[in-house]
Amino acid sequence: MYILDGAMMDSPARAHAHLQEALGFPSYYGRNLDALYDCLTELTGEIRLYHAAEMRRSLEAYADRLLRVLRDAASDRLTVTLID
Image (cartoon, rainbow, N blue to C red):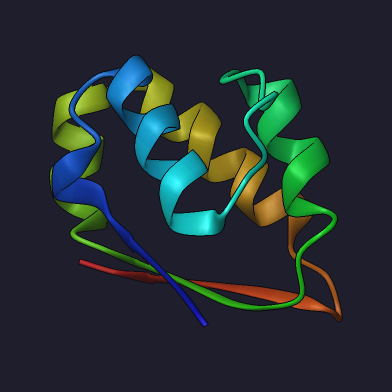
């Protein structure tokens, strides 16, 4: 299981740094939404995103795009759960 803390994602740069660390992405992770999708499709298990509402407040429209990528990458191998 992977744990994400939306409270730590108060800017796009900090969001991608947190995602890279929490999800164990490689050092060459591109820190953008396309790279996020590519790396997510390689994961198996469950991602739990805590403080999703706080992340939405901080990132505004970028949060919607990030959440869309998380949902799009979810599959039979990867589930994503948002916890406000």
